[in-house]
Structure formats: C-alpha cells, structure tokens
Image (cartoon, helix red, strand yellow):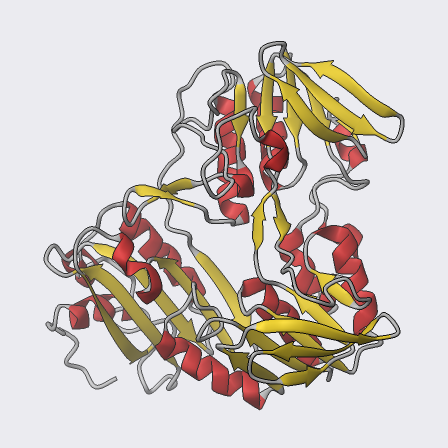
Length: 448
C-alpha cells in the first residue's frame, strides 16, 4: 500500500510517525514544498529571544531523519493538484510537473499569513511570522531595527513584540479590536497586562485600523492608521492566517471559510483522502460544534487519528477546548473554552465569575492568581476558564480543559480532589475556591 502525506509540520510529522508503527509494510511518501522539514513555528519566539540558539534546533525531524526511517522524502516538491478518481497527485518542482499515484492520501496543507490589501504592503522591511525563512529574516532585522510596529495583537504578534521590546527596540502594537489577545483573554486580565506591557516599554494601540504603510526609497518609514501615524523602520504583519486550500477548490468539499470539510474520522468528501491541521475544523467541547483552532496540539492529535483511520475508521477526533498558554513579560497566562467574546456560541445562557486568590497560605507567601470561569447559568456546566499570575500556574488550565470535556459542573469542581501541602497550595485548592465562589458557596473560611 502506498500512502502519501502532504506537509511535514505538526500534523504531517505525527501522521508519518504513527504510520511507521501502524503500517510498517506501507510505502510512505512525504511531500514538502520547502527546503527544510518539520519546523517548529511555535519556537520562533524562543529563537528571537536567544533561548533557542539556532533555527536548526527547532526542527523535530529532518530530511535525513526521515530517510533513516525509510520514508521517501520529497523536498522542494509542491503538490498543486489531485485527481481523486485516478488516485494521483500533481507535483510541481523546478524540473516541471509530474503525477504520482497513491492508495491513501493525507493532506496537511496548513495556513498562510493574511496579507492586508493596503498601500505600501510590498515595501522593504515588512515581515511575516510563519515558518523558518521568515523567522530568520525577522531575527536578522532585530539587530538593525530601532523602531518597530507590530500589526496584530494575537499570540503571534504579542510574542514578536515582546521579543523586540526586550532588546530595547521601540515597539508599538496596533490592533483593530478593542484589546490585544482578544480571543484568548477577557478584559479583566488584559487591563493588567496593558499596564505591565507599558512598564516594560511596549506600547499598545487598540481600536485602530491600519490604512497605509508609507515608505521612502522603497523602505518602510511609518505606519498610518485611522487615528494616527507611527514612525517605524520595521513592520511585522501578524493579523492572522487563513487556510492554504485555494488549490483544493473543486477537488474536495470546502467550508465557506476555506477549511476542508472532514468527517469525525478526518476523511474528506473524497474517499481515501484525509485532511488535518490548520486547514480543518475540530470538534469543540464547550458547544459540541466545530471550530477552527490553529494549535500544534490539535494538529498532533489529528495526525495520529488520520493515520490510524487509513485502513478502517475506528478512532474519532475527540472534542477539545482550544487550550493554550503564554508568557508575557511578568505574567504567565492560560485559557480554555469560551470567553466573553464567544460565549454566545453556547446555546444556554452563560454566566461567569472572576476572582483573585492566594495560591498558598500567607505564612508561605502572598502570591496570587487571577481566575475566571464561564458556565451555563442554569446547569452550572463549565464551558470556559482563564488563569493568570506572576507565578506559573498555567498547568492548572489542563484540569479545567478536562473538566469541560468531561461535562463537569461547578459542583464537581468545588469538591474535586487536589492534594494539600503548604509549600504548593491551600487546603482548598484555588480551583476549588473558584468554583465555590461561582456558586456563591465558599467553604474556605480560613484567612489565607
């Protein structure tokens, strides 16, 4: 059996590793349009900040490691077409186009950075943050930049802006929404982060729409918004990504947003063609619907599941909650499920509770955690949560993610079994207290 996997990032990598175990006798072919394989884009901030010493360290596999595993690797090979009836793909290389046959096909086409159609978008010193080549260009530019503007205040934009600010580059983040990290955190948290970003030399401008990038001699000089102008010698565009699926139109069924339609087992509308990664939607636990959540963790799960379902559909993609975390200057933060911005996606009325609690008894220290939990008002089913602290409590978001997937109510979390040792937590863990306060039934009478 000949199996072709298109794309070597998280989903493609995991699919290959699973196929090597599940189908050891299969003929495996891996296609990559670039000249390097399996780059960890999530590690770009670490590289920009000098934590990862080289880009080579951000590859979890290479062309050589695939060859050692007897995988047929095809680098600089762009898959540009598919004939599902003939079971062939069209591959474009520097030598032209060829057709290759398959028995089973797994697609991981990924996503491409959104390029906003404004004057000056093609000037020099405008950068995007996606993949190894862009990471290298941005890092090189950091050594020359004095004033930078980052357009977009999501995870990627904020990570790059932080890296620039830490090395003393005058950096401004511009976002069209009313706050940065809008889809990850609610206002209570971002208000604190805004003050902390300002203290660390990072300027944030929200509710502003970029209208133009002005240049001189072909090079960036300033960014113009509907509310002001900002001098810059470097501009980072981080306004999101969109599925790289235009080439699949008319081949497999696509959703209106360009994502590939897949069933519970990741098979597309065409038999023996599976799809995964940032070009697909996944089951969303809070509302039992489907949602586009471009996270490496989701892509890895899909890679395993697609590979396991090659011969027989036996493993469904589980519901997830879009759980993620981030460090930003002095704070560590994490979120899962719905927030204020998307709580209307839940059929029931959603309520929320925000609290600030001590992590440990005061005789240990006074470290605090900010927490918020979203839940169905009548049933008390948990549908979302956020945590933030200067102390690293981010792993606790995994508890809340599991709680959402398991259909837990506030009552269950209020009495959940967590260990107690003063050096780590309180007799009632802060997650217990969060649920108790949401129920207006706080059992923790101790003055911690």
